Image (cartoon, rainbow, N blue to C red):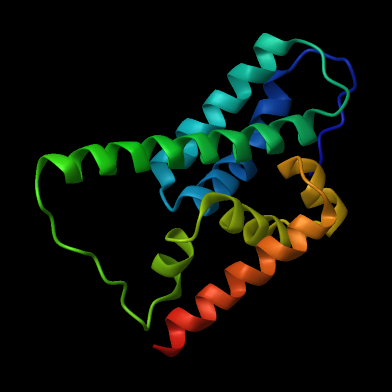
Length: 154
């Protein structure tokens, strides 16, 4: 259900309706239910801090994507820091399982795939969410699918 509470404060009912979808989107973008819940909560707090927005649904979706990208960057910095401290083993995904391959995609590529194939958004809508041009969405999607195809055929 789409929320279009134009310039209205967030209500308990709107929260109840949006929560499962936000958590699901966060989980798909991050690969973690717990992190998906955290992102959904942060997005909702951001909406409450903002106060009035024209399109609550669009604001929350954009917030989840941005928060997921930031979480991915933070995680990459942490992994880089830890790898400089100790020499670790390289994780190889199971070729029979697609989900770990999707999780391993760069954040923007994964976001483009999730928004396209899960949220069923058009390229123009995805471009708005990601803050880029529709051509960039096509490129991100194409590269992500090519990468998945390469990984599966190995």
